[in-house]
Length: 223
Image (cartoon, rainbow, N blue to C red; front, top):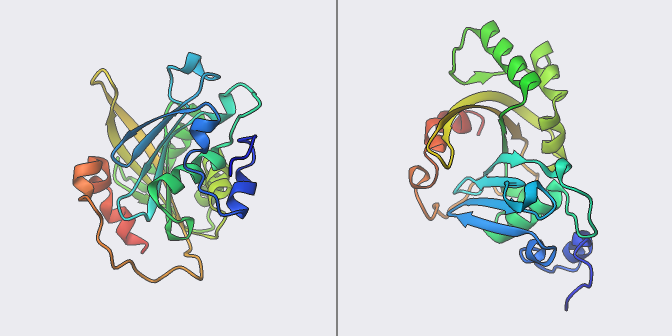
């Protein structure tokens, strides 16, 4: 059965139909490198710039949203939102939303948020080390006011347990090293989620994304 409009992911979900092919049906192009998915649109950046880039942690417990320019995509009949694209990629990766307890956002070329993060680091004298944000304090509330928290709740609306700030060096296609801030949102597990997974990851973390290894301690800290 095929729906005539790809703008009905909710209907697809309710009917139990896989969403993995909905991106292509809506005219989006996908490039996949192991657990990393880059999504392109003809309605953004002349289709040559990445619209959305999401990297899934091998155990399926975390997703890193590296690029999310969906608000800048021109309106068109088959336009999908970030949550719709995220759901489709989860389906493609066989990742269940209930299993995800970490949503990680890259903060790049966002002067206001980069300045906020820099100020928090100064307050904690942390340099570029990971910083845990004290719950309920001014810094916690400032992070909740950023677009990244709103995006996190749009993707998975579950109570927030902890917030960490991280940092890593990414490499662009030209080989340039780019310092990048990260915000780690740790979500409460769904009540119906199993306590632990018994199936080991298909591929070691270090073979998929080196920066996950660098911040593995942060991911373990709130389990």
